[in-house]
Image 1: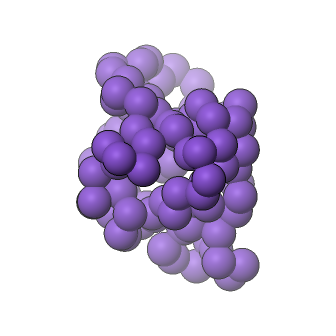
Image 2: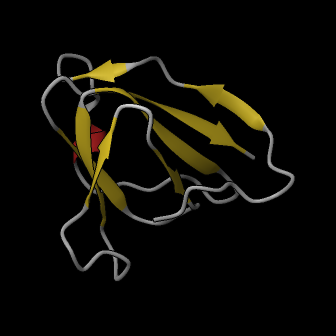
Length: 94
């Protein structure tokens, strides 16, 4: 699972923190980040499963816990499954 952003990208914005009561439904089903934009999902507390919706993920996802992150390349389908106490935010870079 990628954890490093490419050289030269600059932070554009960060979402609010999401938890079970505030996560947008679209993040729980397959979706993509726009062309030219990279994402970094950062788990603030609890745990979640990050699932690539393409050939990258043959295991059904990766568990992430508080303090861990995953880098999301542009246009790669993915989704999240929230675990107990999950709270996370997504940073967007261009």
